[in-house]
Length: 356
Length: 232
Image (cartoon, rainbow over all chains, first blue to last red; front, side, top):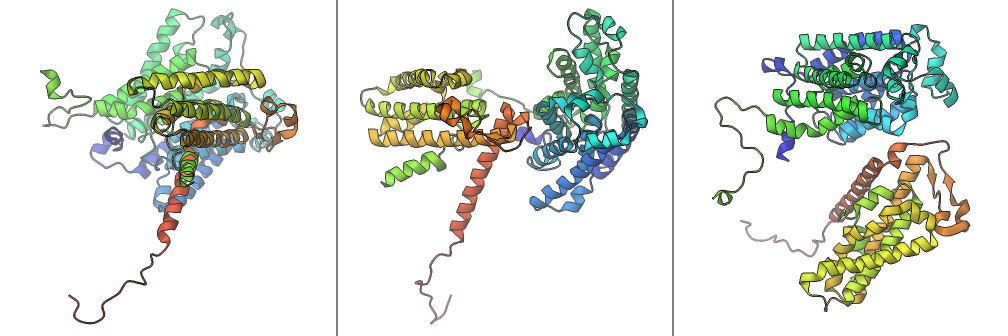
């Protein structure tokens, strides 16, 4: 159990050296930095993005209050730290726009009730709650989770989005209305088709790639704000995006006809959202600087490997959860040595009689 | 009779192989996605457990301690082969669905555990009873888990029962939620989750029982209190 404690003191960045990290302030800034991304997403993918976020955010707060009440904790201070709201918003932007209400409900129950409060609430959850919700939904409801409506913009019929949200749409209608994400389409292009032929055939509705790139750049802008305000440190995003870039370049240079280009991997997926807003979660991420670098780099490697060789089109959620598992070990072996103290004794030490 | 009660309580509740000893988790997690699978494997395990415990108890004076484990495993393997052949003969479709998990009953630690910890030290009748109760405890947990996962995963209960009971069970399937699928509960992660909830539920019941017993005020009416003289 001593290894578990290594990650319990959440070091939230360089700024925390002078001012103690204030959870509410931190979460507010993260929410604020998500606004450009949410805005651009809504412009491209329609009002369904907002219904997702609204319902998931409200459910996050409601379930948090309910669980705090059941666990006989004071509700107000914990609810005011906005962490449950942030989990909801993160899940909301990860789901396909205008997801049906029950999908969001199941995801938020998994996130807040199971991943957060069954493990002891904020600060004790080893896994990122929003990603637990997302992974559960992806495993359980692959049909609903891989249908992504084309970027029709705000002009999309409001009543269509509403009916989709209420879960009143038949499977055939839903299928006609939505398509695959660029990653999904590229993954299923088949061995016979070259990448250049695939793109020449215009496999996606017009403007899809551009829309995804705009959204990714908006997340990047939000991430820059967080870096500038020193809400997050640069280690995790840089390591994650760097290792993604390195591995995807290697694969692309080896065989450009079957692998996505580095810019495709970085800009038409959840990579930017994941690197700046999800992998940097102060509770479930590594805390020391060396640990953060290893943690981020390993997430990036896993994302590209799982995208290339795995069964699912995107892998940010799975990679983050897998590395969440490794965080206690990473922190244990990379905890910095305090000035003036001897090097820490780590791992198994053979008893003295074995040495002689 | 009191020994029988103790053995029953141990096997079914307080030392349940699945919920307390956490033994035999591999089949428990792998095949319990429907009642019929769970019941099939539960019955096979029950048969092997009773047979192995009885036989081990019969030969307990003849087997030297140094070779007891290989001997027990051979006995268990013999009974597993019997169970496997029986299932292949009478419930062939179920035999094919359960597949590798029937031969894997040999490696179920609950069986070897009972053979070594109980049957090899006790006469035949208690050993057989212990095997029966442990097997029942395991099978009941398996069936409850299978039922919960079947309802949560596909919204049905008792689907596919003809596989085990033949044509007379054709009308047994209940559709509780129509047009519903929640893959998480059908896949192994759901088994971990539901097993965790079952263990938590058992601990909750135990805790409640303990509190209720403590809440009964102890009789102190016969205790004398000195009311005269000086109290130091």
